[in-house]
Amino acid sequence: MSEDPEKTGGGGGAFHIGSIGNVYGDMVTGGQTKINLNSSQTESRNAIADIAQAVDRAPPEVKNDASGKLTDLKAEIGKGKKSDDGAMSRLIKGLVDLVPGATQAVVSAFGTPLLGAIAGPLTKKVIKEIEGHMSGGQPDQESPDEPQTV
Image (cartoon, rainbow, N blue to C red):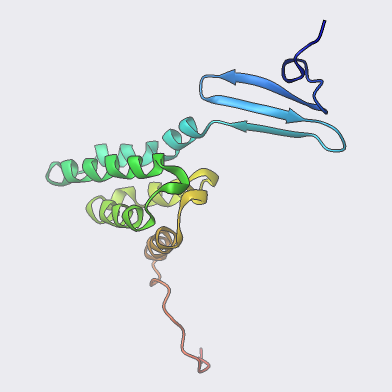
């Protein structure tokens, strides 16, 4: 009787540990042990939960616009690596402009491995500018070639 190597773990030191909801993974053994669990849908929802809470607390006059931007941002995030970097950066900037209380949540969300991995150069630049404003500094500017005195 032949057993399925994927179910028994007999296929070259690797076996499938199954899936539960949106969590799935594999374990590879041998010289090294590697466990890879992936729960991207849950992780992305958790990463933007604080942003959604900030939008929920937004003043009534901006709440609809902010909710629309958040919905569009979620859609871009859902595209993963195929997301439109320009659209995502504009949505983030627009959201923070409408709801300044979402600033920390946006920076934290895009500091997670999942959202950090799908953020392109424009999105990363916007996040860096937002961080600069949070710390009271100015956004990064090109520094002159001449030395500065302090």
